[in-house]
Amino acid sequence: MTNILPSEFIIFIIIIIIMHHGCRRAFIMLYLLLIQLIILPVYDAQQNFQYDYYWILFSYDIDGVKYTNDSDYEHKEGTFAFQDVALEEHEKFLIRQNLIPYDFIHDAYLVIISIPRTRPGIPFTLIYFSRFDYGKEPMLKPFPNSKDGKELISVFNMFEDSCFRLWFVDTGYLDIPGVRKQVQPASLLLYSNLPKSEFQFRKDIDSAFLHNGITSGLRSLSVDFILPCSESYVYITDDTTRDLIVFSLQDLRFTKINRASNTADSWKFIVPQFETQYRLEVKKYRKRPNETYEHYVDFLNSTNQLYEPRSDSRPRDTFNNTYYPNYEGLIYTKNFEGNILLFTNWNRNELYCWNMDTPYEEENVDLLSRVDGAKHRFSALDASGNRFFGLMQRTLNSTSSKFNEDEYNVWFFSINFSEMLEGSKCTKSNQCTDYLTRRSASQTLLFLGRIVPKYVSDNVIRNIENMWNVTGIMN
Image 1 (cartoon, rainbow, N blue to C red):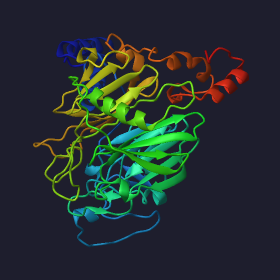
Image 2 (spheres, helix red, strand yellow):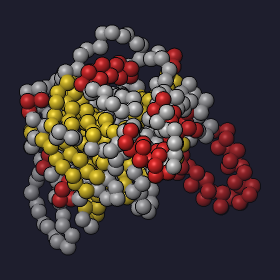
Image 3 (spheres, one colour):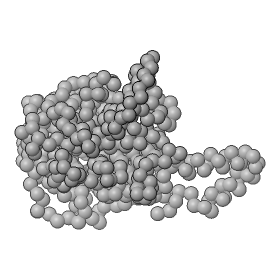
Image 4 (spheres, rainbow, N blue to C red):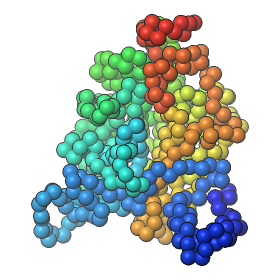
């Protein structure tokens, strides 16, 4: 891997600046250049990520009260509180060093970030900022607001479908070392996400679907839907058993799928194994209706670790007082238009791609980017539209178990998706199914680039044909 600006190139830039602007102005411009080199991680030279936002540590705006430092207590605007009581770590309201992102959802208006409550000092598990906020280091607010945000205990992954809906599971489990407890039942929540986030429903997950009532393994979820949006299924991975809990929106009920172990194939790289397990088990459950669409196949990540959350044996992607706060384990995202899967290695410092129209073989996987794992790692990825978005954090280790508050530690970045794939083995393709090749004729008339539905019922297609005088889509 080569640095973005090698030393010879930096010297050349300095000479040019001095020649054109004089010494004093050159010093100022050089100072600004060095700041850019300090705040931006060193990426693979072939990638030119755009840094939309970056933070030293997250700061909060809670009902008008600004928190730019740690706080033992929550404050109310216009009031003063003088309290001189020594608190335990888990009793403190805000510890900014512990605000480490796990996942994000973005749309035209908001970026929503999840922070599972696995360490003390995390007042809200979901926070957001407006994309219309000025500045590169926006303050974050509780999602959807401070009152309702306090009712959410701990959220890991979220899913935004193309029906303008936000889905997530609240485990209800406070996973702070020393005070672990089940605060409330695990539940599936649904919000409409446009034009503004509005609560739709909360459905508790019956403990009969869980292993010994354990909820902290309910981290990943995916949504399978057809237009019209009322026919939807939510697939929730239970990391304690590797089973799937399926929710039907039409029936408003849960069903459990016992996921069989994968013994039929022995591919060399890890990602297709998840896809195989998902395809084999879910297709048995999801009966093909009389519709012209291909079954939606997604990847549900699993740590493949059986553990007892109430014991000292912890999965590697959660925090423990003996671990440094770096999430580990494969993370992934899928671009449905090109049928491209992007995923990281276990340490999350390498980003790979795989065109899913090609065979499940290692030679069809390509390395897109590598960061210095001792300094940086990917936190979350999203390739659902024409741009690739991601969160990155600075790596913490034995010599630096806390973020350096004199430098930036969290970045939100993006890049044009097609440009990122250019020259790789994963060049965008739109030939995976007949449905994918024909759908653009109707759907581009109705949907934005990143929110195209994954499939459309025959009735909806006929309505589109009649509305826009488009024919032949059904053929």
